[in-house]
Length: 180
Ligand SMILES: Cc1cc2nc3c(=O)[nH]c(=O)nc-3n(C[C@H](O)[C@H](O)[C@H](O)COP(=O)(O)O)c2cc1C
Image (tube, rainbow, N blue to C red):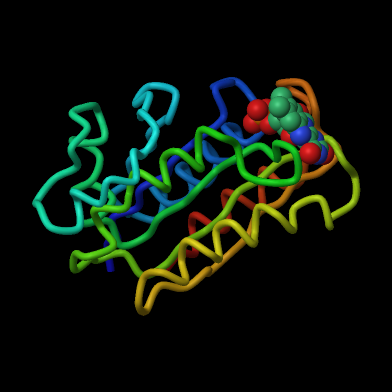
C-alpha cells in the first residue's frame, strides 16, 4: 500500500548528519513506492507558539507564517519522521518550535499513525538520545492512536560529513523501505 510519508528535517545544516539520515530514509521510502516529501524547518522558519490557544477554537493559527501551508501536509500524512541533532540532551530548538506550532492539530482528526525519530549527536553513549526520545514520545502521547514505530540514532558524529560511510545510513534506508 502506498503511504504518504512526511519527513521533517530540523537541523539548519542541510548537509549535516541528521539530514543525511533523513535523506536515506526518504530514498528507501520512495524506492518502496511511497509518496515521500522531505521538508526543512530551516526553510519554514516557524515563529514561536504564542500560547494564545486561538487554534483550539478556530480553523487556523493566529500567526500567519509558513506553518499555514505545512499543517495540512502533516495532518494528511500516514507516516511522520522527525530528524534532529541532539542539542543539550534534547531535540533542536527548531524541532521543538515546529512541534509546538502543530498545536492546531491537537483538536483535529489527523491521519498520521506512525512516527519515526532520527537523531545524531557527538556523544558515543546511546543514553545521550534519552531526552530526544522523551520529547517525541511526549508529543505522540497527545495524539490518540499514534505510535513511535522506529528510532534511527547515530552517535559519535559532530561535523557535517562525519556520518559518511556509517552503517546507520543503511539502517535509515531500510527503515524507510520497510515502513509498511
Ligand atoms: C547547540 C548545540 C548543542 C549540542 N548539544 C549536544 C549534546 O547535548 N550532546 C551531544 O552529544 N552533542 C551535542 N551537540 C552536537 C550535535 O548533536 C552533533 O554535532 C550532531 O551530529 C549535529 O547534527 P547535524 O549535523 O544534523 O546538525 C550539540 C551541538 C550544538 C550546535
